[in-house]
Structure formats: structure tokens, C-alpha cells
Image 1 (spheres, rainbow, N blue to C red):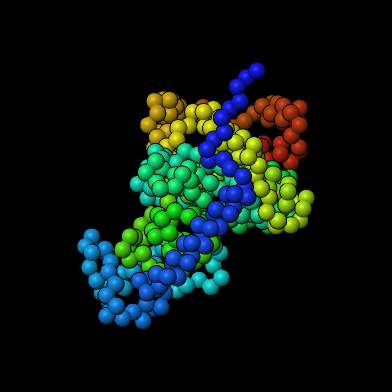
Image 2 (image 1 turned 120 degrees about the vertical axis):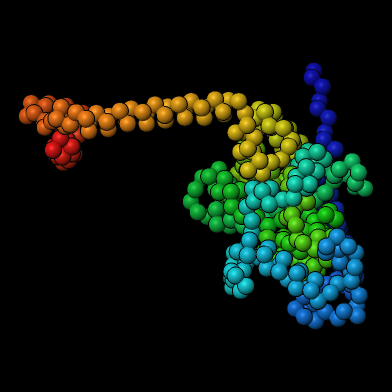
Length: 374
């Protein structure tokens, strides 16, 4: 009898994972409330900041007190983020602007160092439960972390719409996955660097953050931690997550409720194995790339360059033939452009009729031939 595969250490009961995630997110909220005196809040950014509070920033690469000029720079960075994500047009907020962000955009807009960490350190992702379009995912933590895993929450904003839009469950799942999401992560990188960006960009899931990251990320660079980036790469990779999403749609249509649906230990293990198998079949490594990076890598391949050279050679040949024909029409106009004979006219009409062309199509073609020979 074949030996049973060992269970991945990331896999655990959905109930246990949910309880742990709730505990971590609640602890984060409690700590944030306790730290309020040290936060540069939305009210402070609106002009209520008292310089006597003596809050510090690292803007400009130096640890120093926040100034009025810093506040103006912070607000400009906020406006840039909101314009990028459709929350602001020019200097004016957009009322009722749609929220969310595409999974692939998260990867494309992420900081290079975060993508590198996701590629080197985060290799395993599995869903543990879903509720009404919100999927609770777990990833491994890096070897340097003081925990073994992290919790990432992903809300699919098109879930309700595709549940009722009349497509098959697989088509609905594919549309949902290709649509916009909101996300959250329990790690420190997301908490102190990126939750504020997600909040002002309107793609935050979970508690909002109005405290400007004046020390850790005063220029508002990047968009997501390594755990979120790895999750988004799995979501946008295709088949494996699409099948999971298909089961989400099937369950939603069957139960018509937003009751939490756990992913069994066996299903979690199968998901991890399927992702790995798909990666091997596609000969895709663990390196996460933006669309531009992937395109540049493809174009650097010898096979791609040979194809491009062949296409260019064909285009050159076609251009040479066109040029020769144009020259012939000019130099031998009497022979090349001579009128069509009646017999040729009838033969063309007969041939087109035999091929099923309508009388209207034949007349249009003959008119074009006559015009060309005029």
C-alpha cells in the first residue's frame, strides 16, 4: 500500500483558523485604539495638528519632528493615491466612487522588495473558509517570523452579482475572480505600511485606518505585503482558484445564504497540491512578476525573438511585393490596368455564384473590379 502523503503544516481545521484570525484582528484593533495619542489622524491632516505634540517622521530619510510642510506633503501623497484608484479627480473627491482593486493590479503596483520577499519566502496558500464572497486564506510565514502563518481576508466584490446573473457556475466564478477585491492581512507590514493606503484607496477589508504612516511609509510607496501578494498571484493564476470559486458559487446558489462555509482539512491539502501541480505543468517558478516584467521576460526568450524575426521577414516580403506591383501599375499602366473583358466578367460572376455569394455581393464585387480597371 502506497504511503500516505504527509499533511502540509499550514493545514488546520477551519474553526481553529477562524478563531485564531478573529483573535489576531481584535488584538490589532485594541492596540490601535490604545495607540491613538501617537497617531497622526485624519483630523490632524485636516489642519487640527498641534506641533507641540512632537510627533516624528522619516520623510526625507531623517528621523525628525513633523512640520507644517510635512503635512502638506502627506496630503499630496494621499491625493496621488486617491487619483490613481479613482477616488479623486484632480483635487476633488469623487462622490460615490466605486471601490476595490483587481488582483493583478495588486501585484503590478506592489513594491519590488515586497514581490521579492513573496517569491523567496511565501510559497504556500490555502483557503480555510468563505462567507458571502469573503474568503479567509492562510499563508506560511517567513522563517524569520515569530509566527508560523498569516491570515489574509479577500472580499470579491462581484460575488452577489455573478450569483444571480444567469451564467454557469464556472463562468460566474471566472467573472468573480476577474473582478475587483478588497483585502486585509494580520501581519505588521500590512498594519503599519499598507492598511492606510488600502483605506484611502477604498480597497480595504476589515477595520479602516486613518493614521498616516508618518514613520514607516511617509511617501506611501507600495501597496501590499508579501502574504497578500502571494495570495493575489494564486487568485490570478487561473484554474485551481477558479475551481474553488466555482464551489463558492454553487454553494451560494444552493443555500441562498451568507452562512460561513468551512473548507475541510482534506480540501485544504488538495488545494495546496493542485496549486503546486499547476505550477509544475506550466513550468512556472515561484517568482512573482508584474505584467511588464513577464512581458520583458517573454520577449528576451530566443524562441520569441525567432518568431519576431520571422514575422518581420514576412512583413518585409509583403512590402516588397506591394512596392513591385505599384511600380508595375505605374510603368505598364496600359497592360496592367486594361479594362476587364466581358467573358472575364461573366466567369467571375459564375464562380462567385457557385461559391454561394448573393446577387448583391456579386454585384458589389463586379463594380469594384470595373472601378479598378477604369
